[in-house]
Image: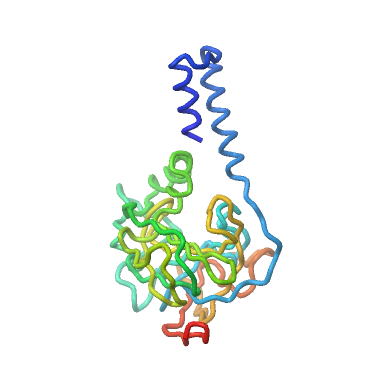
Length: 292
């Protein structure tokens, strides 16, 4: 989209085309870019189906947010296979916490927190099902959290739009891994830590295998894992698919979410935790017969 505008302007400067002069020319280019952006955001859809039961992508004690267990679409968009996407970070309180974290209320400071200040940063990410790696990327740097008011406003009002416009899904998803499952579905793992990928394209993985680490890359407010299922490997052409996790037990509600918590909506996906839920994922799993 940005490239389209650049090409049109370059054609004008070189004399290939002669557009109208003045303000109308500028407004015309902007209008075409915005139109292309809106068309680009049109998302495919699939027939409704029963959720696929898969392994959890993390182990131990975590907090769920932007969950399909609260509403669908969980992230407010159906694009890029995110209809049933879910985010995972560490709870804000508990015996395993090192530093306080609050994903609901930004803090007052000049700069956002370092990714290393979050206890989930660098935690292992596990494959949710057996399959073959079809896409990897782990070269983007981990950024500071957008957990100050000024950083949050920048991201909401302009930063996310510019990232989308200039870099497309690669800049939004950040470091990522996509795995093709033998049932024709695909799992996408996003915002991964730079240099943490343990797999490569074409590699066969089993359910539960460590494939990377939690990071803070792409359009991310703070270190967390974003994961979703989709019907094809291409983010821009994919439709989202529902899933539930085996070995997932809800322990309660995170204190930082209690005053913001709402009852799950009518579109909520049964079997998935609601926003703010503290869950414990099974530490171990038994291999299925197909995995030997």
